[in-house]
Image (cartoon, rainbow over all chains, first blue to last red; front, side, top):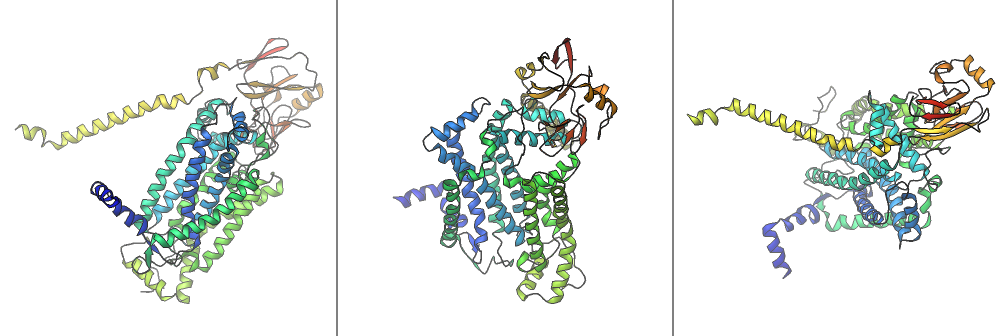
Length: 418
Length: 170
Ligand code: FES
């Protein structure tokens, strides 16, 4: 009976074929470590956010006079409303955590290199959409932090040349963040996740074209691939279990740790809280914004700081695959960069005294400097590593990449292996 | 013959395709305008454009905050010492004489929105301090410490009677 039905469908739609090629039988490098779990986890959190969000929207009211109270209504009166809200609020942080780890893995192992540039760039687009969604969602509870966060961020658009002031009024639909702003943010906050789902489909189609990278950086396509199911389904679900332990401990035991106390005060357009901080996942970029004394310059620097990652495929000139696992200097640079991110995060969370501003400026210079130095460092490092002698598999891969279909955008250099 | 004229005439076909694409594109662009315009402030928001405020009951040194277009407006009744100090200086980062910023030296009316990122500065000691990123303004609303790039804005206002002002029209 079941076979008959599947046969009937297969005549009209490539169901079995699709499942076999793209899901169960999808060839996956067998040496993937747990750092390769985070793409799946991001997909899981996306579904979680969409589901909890839809159920919250059944009780939430996007109106400046009602929204703050409707959150209290959800917390106190709606059955399991507290759970839905805590899951959604914690889920936002979890989403960024998972995505940042996913990005760090890509940077560490050089997975953005050819032929995976489009994956990296679609991922960058998804990050921007995620940031926009999170930012708009943060206004919805209509607390003090919501209101002033939205005020400060929409004000950034004043840096637009010539029409800055009009753009800000247009974005807000009012002279200040108000009811019009709240309602449109709600509409867009509901829309964006579906755009993100569309972006994820593109990201996955690209993935299934170029296949997963792996920690060695060596192309295993022919030799060492195994079917996704059952090996990686079980690995992903094990990782999911660990993730859920961390996630649930936040949801059930520290749900307020991600909610600023000032956001339990209703929005008051006449009074700014003494210290405005964005959510933790925006802190490094916020620190960069504050580090530039000139306003337009600060906005430009912040925008650029998020977009810098997109240039990685061009900046990294080395032909040695495997990223930091084969490249000691990249490894040092990677950890220094992470450390610098933590410094920036700390600066972003701290009120701006003269000292803190200075630390922020040094860290900002280091942030951009590390990107701009990559072309020089990667070439010098490649020379040094080749002189020192590479493992034969790596050498073979470099040679095959230079010859093969995947043309890397480099010319041969003196001192190369032939 | 007819075949040569129509099907074979690629120059004419290309021209028609171009014209169609341009006309269609222009139509689509114009169709976007209502949607974009709908996001601008609506008529009821525009209708809140002016605010009246009664100045009676304010002693020298007092400050009041009133809402105008949803924004806070600071009204400061300045003491003679404050007036003297402000007239003596020309401001800080964005020099401007005090006389240009007031209608009557006793009354300072400024929009209480930091010109940096839009926080509301607090009245602290002489002038205002913005806690968001540490900008400072003097008792004429002029910026004396960055990162704010400009002085606090003076809204259009006028005295309807000796002790009543209307903000939003000059
Ligand atoms: S908003 Fe006032 S200093 Fe930045």
